[in-house]
Length: 363
Ligand SMILES: *Cc1c(COP(=O)(O)O)cnc(C)c1O
Image (tube, rainbow, N blue to C red; front, side):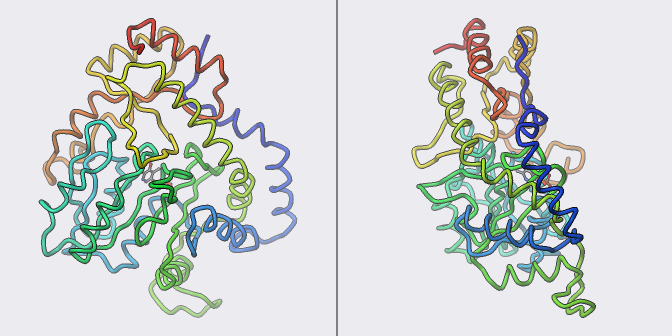
């Protein structure tokens, strides 16, 4: 038997008739950028994240970069980031000419350690980017508390956290602004690139909406030096279809995560804080025989991936320019992501669990 890590074709094919209806409606509308679909998606996604405003943009990286830019964070400024994350979090800071300053991660829940933030705050620090890595909410109350004391902005990188909650509140509504990605493999994925900024800060939303449209809110009138980063009508239409399934899919991910948690040794399972209801974008084990386990699972037909084998500070792009921190290095050498997503059937989940139990990773 084979169990794939993720099967987007399977997930999207099940929605084929709804996605085709959406495609045909947009084709017929003759309006492919900034029409009804993106407007409707923005209001639906704002409601979904319990935020007042949502601005659809080109991708998740742009969403982060645009928030930093709108807060006038740039040259000479520092932004605190977790030492382990997908590199886009760091690159968005670098793209604004600011400097990413890493804080180490918790060895078991993989999120930034709030108690270490104060050690790296300087008079150049402007913001903290809290990443809800793997869909595990970061400790936002602790982060917000420090940010308030030092006058810093808090930006959530919620690219993996659609539907995750922290103390019952939606990820994406917990800081000053949040960035979402709709890259196809995310929990809410388009059939191409897409992203969104969500916020309760009306000025921020208004600024970004204009900035990403060549600095224009009225045709051929340009009030600022803008750029182009828009969520197109087709992607917005597809996302509207998929948004209506997101709660159901998140529920399925939670059932799978529970099955893994119950069956596997607590020495290797991810630690879930009592205030967290994760979106389980990824289910990540931690073991010091990671490479061996990955090879043995592959032999049994279970496909696994590594998120991420190298922390940003150790990538060639950043090597030598920023400190490489201990927990993130250890984590990178131990992490292994199990199959996760609504493509999995009961027999697949049993296959993964049985394989791990046979290899000695059972409870
Ligand atoms: C996917 C991702 C991004 C970037 O999103 P794109 O849409 O691919 O640009 C940023 N941060 C994290 C944590 C991500 O997982």
